[in-house]
Image (cartoon, rainbow, N blue to C red; front, side):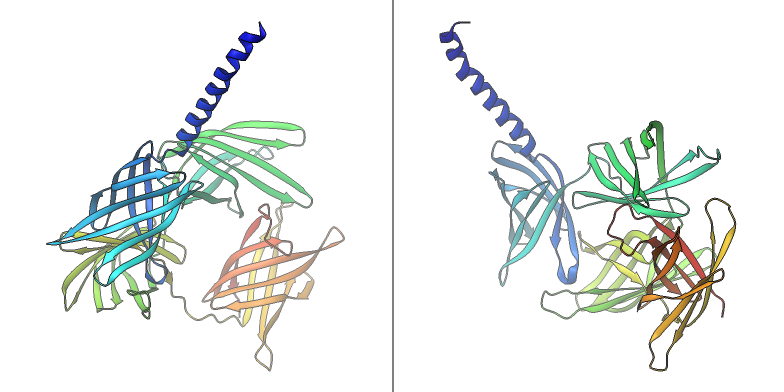
Length: 456
């Protein structure tokens, strides 16, 4: 090719490359799609809305839906990472303008929301995250066959997608570990499970496609120099939840106001749930309580000097945590907010003798452990842990409300190994996890389950 021809083609090639780069960048930065909008509330509460965007160059169109209805976006712009738009709401003969502004940070938009109120503008934190095509949040279960004894075993992964990030834990009937490198791209999901055995770490890679009710894909693992790949098919699993008892949370209606505690009591007679709610407006019975798997829902009607209001609660129970979305109706409008309620447990009484059994991996025989907790003359809590004929004092003992933790030293293959114990005291039972090593910083740190019963 002649030099003159090459020199004439080079600018075209460079221009084509730049256009490709610009097109790719624009596609990557396109904000079109559905977003979950999270607005700062009082006392750590949040209000959730839904944002639908359509981007054409630097222009943004779409709508924002929240407790005050669905509002069209006005003056929407997206330029050089900066995002802004306004919405106008009408309340009778009064209009209220709310301005949103922020910058794109990775997969999120972070900024502020300014409301044009009667007493002047009020500014609150605002964030938006892309809404997943299919939300993987929940518990997923599958069965596999052990290569050692041919027995069928169940495994679970508990996933949570929040604020654009995917996290989770992998669990068997004996313990759990945090998953590593979780990703969600459209309907494609992947993560790794790493488990430590002394200085050795084994890694298993999971990849699959979500279809709403299941995940289908493959599992890749390595044993020595052998690479294995098997089919993977997981389905949603709904664990049984216990809603009974008293639940508490703190609510603040004004930014500088003092919080007040709300209480929820759930009871059961036969198969029928009932209960009461106590809040700012006093006590009221709950209505239409229903438990579906681990989802608790009910309604509460309260009255104050401005009239009667009905709030619907619906959320997941996870152990001692209840996280409902509360929707309160004001006439033909509905305001939604998220709360986190914690189960109120009876005061812990740790002093006593606690026993449990462990099954050793190879022989299958069981070994009994005995934890003895005492208070010294000056009121300090201490104790010992015995296993078989070996007894030693426990260390790093901490008790905060009903949460207890301590460490124990054990000999293993002529080495001293630290075992970390964590658990929750519930009357005459302690349930929790144990970990080998003095720290849980490693994602490969396997946590085994333990459950102790009070003996004396």
